[in-house]
Image (cartoon, rainbow, N blue to C red; front, side, top):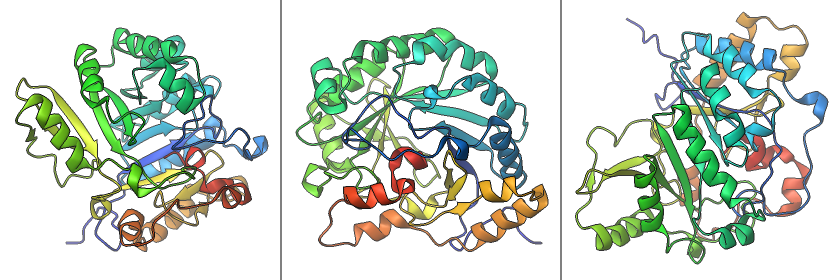
Length: 345
């Protein structure tokens, strides 16, 4: 009997799709958008909600059941609950989530929840407002905290906080962030600093590895146990438990890539499909959508492309000896699709 699940050359299923709804952002974080000026995608190229929903339906027919809305900052896309409602109507999508920087979340959390958004992840790299101003060029640290509170009040039971850990910036806040997550009933996920897209100032000496994070937290809390059943799953984070039951995750994409279990791909706001965060090239789905391709034709393209997928970008980067930032600024400006904020990190 043939396997009904669509798999790539490494046997990885097509299960998860990250959809960037805009390439714009209202922060300038050092690991993503450190510059003041950017080359933006043309407005007319941005997919409509109906086009996104149609593509979700095609992906759903091929096995995708997890959708995550990203950006840029997704809440800069006007009337986002309408898109959430369109996607939530598809019974094949069993996990509908969004990642946000939280600046506008207090205003929109309840409406998104009513529309059918199941899960939220909020980026919170520091608990210190002055550090956020220096690192992300934003004075609105209080708005992020208000957004987290609003998300909890709106009824999101599975709230996560993402913290990119960078040596010399926030690596002294691991325990503080963990305590904040515990107090706000949110699970913290520490992320190793990655050399992708706009991280033009990246260097290996700024990376705090999963091993070092665990050593530091063990020194503070004592024994830390891995949560059985999570390791080896397609989820990017390995999860751990403190003695008092507090859980947290670490995404070790830089020092311990999870490429061989990765079931996710990315759709940019203008309809380019990337099979890997590190991929140099993507597949233009917008042109086919707008030139009259049928759902069956789109499905055939997606199926053939995924079955040939051999991407393992993070593993390949691990083997680079003189490793620096993936792209210089000039290369990013030459092709905005290389930006993290364009392909929905």
